[in-house]
Amino acid sequence: MIEDQLIYSGPRDRLARGRLHKVMVTLNAPVRWPAWQILLLALLLGLLAGLFWYFPQGDSETAVGIAVLLGLFFLGDIVILSFLPPRRISFGSWKAQFFPLALPRTLAAVGIGILSFWLPQTWAFGMFLAVQLLASVLLIWGAHVEPASLNLTHLNVTSVKIPPDWKPMRILHISDLHIERFSLREEMILDYMDEQQPDIILITGDYLNLSFNLDPEAYFQAQQFLSLLSAPQGVYAVLGTPTVDLWELIEPLFEELPITLLRDQRFEVQWPDSRRLTLLGLDCTHNIEQDAQRLAELAAGAPQSVPEVLLYHSPELMPQAVELGIDLYLCGHTHGGQVRVPVIGPLLTSSDLGRDYVMGHYQAGQTDLYVSAGVGLEGLSAPRVRLLAPPEITLLTLRPQ
Image (cartoon, rainbow, N blue to C red; front, side, top):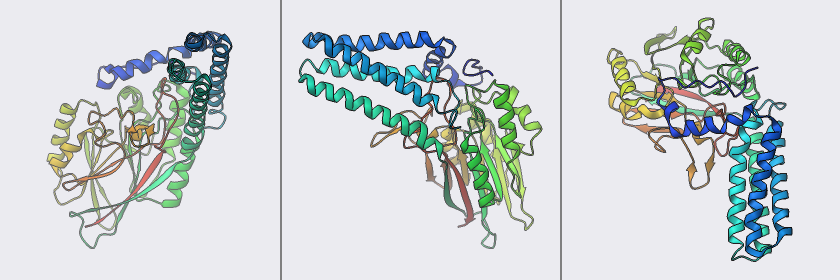
C-alpha cells in the first residue's frame, strides 16, 4: 500500500505552488520516519516546554512535570489518531498528522510557561492543564464524532427559466469525497441515495485523498463506490483540484463507469416529460482568469430558455457566473474551512475569494451558488478532523419561480 508518500505537484495547479501546500508537504515528511524518531522529537519538544517553566521560578519539579504531562498528551493524540482506521473514519498515517498537533500544544505550553513569570505557579499550571485537556476533547470530537456522520442538506432553488407546469427537478450534489478507503461516509451516501431517489446526481471533484491519489487500492475502491451511484437521469461529474485529481489517472477511472465526465463540455439533460437542464462542466485549475475565459466560451452557446447548472470544483468563479446569468452553480473545495472557530469562522478556505463563499447557499443576481462542505478530509499532514464543518451532501429541488 502506498500511503502518504507519493505526492504529485504538476504545473497545472497554482495551489500546488502555494505556501500552504509546501508547508503541508514538509510536515508530511515524518510519514517515512521510524516511530522511535518521532517519539524522540516529541521528547525534545516536551523538554523544551519544561525549560520555559523552569526559568521563572527555578522549580525543576514543576518543569519535569510539565514535560511529562505534555508527553502524555502527545501519546494521547497518537492513540486518538490510531483508532480512526479501525472505525473506518479516516485512514491516514498518524505520523503525518502528529507534528501539526504537537507543535500547537508545545507553543501553548511555552506561552503559559512565559506567563508564569507574572502568574502564580498554581494558576499557570491550571491554565496549562485546561488548555491541553480542551485540545484533547476537541481532537476526539473533530476526529471521531463530526467526520463520522454525514448531513443531508435540503435546499429549494427557483429559476425564471422553468415553465410553471414543470415538475420540480431533484438534484443530489456530492463533492470532495477524498476517498482513502471505503468509509462510513460512503455507506451513508448510498443510503441517502436509495432513500431520496434523486432525478440526477452531480459530483464536483476531488475523488481521492491527496495522500492516496497514487494508491492502487484507493483508486479501486473509489471506482467501486462511484459505480454504485445511479439516478434516472444519470450521474455527471467534473474534475477537482489537479493536484488531487491527477488528470492522467482520474479520467481513465471514469472510462469504465456509468458516469458522464464533463471536461469543458456542455450537456443537455432531458426528462421523459420534456423537462430540460443544461449542464456546464468545467475543469478547475484555480487559474481564475483562464478558467473564467473557458466558462464564458462554454456558456456562450447554451440555450437561453433552459436553466443552466455550472459544475466547477471551487466557488472562485462566482463573480463571472453572476455576470453570465447562470442559474445554479454547484461546487465544493473549501470543506467549509474544515476547522471553524466560533465567531472567527474558518481558519483557511484555499480560495482566492477568501471568506466570501465558504459554505452553504449564496444568491447574487439570478445566480444561486451552493458551496458544499464536502464529504471527506484533507490529506498530507492536515489532521483528519472537522470542527463545526460537518460533512454533507445536498439535495437541491429546482422549481419554477
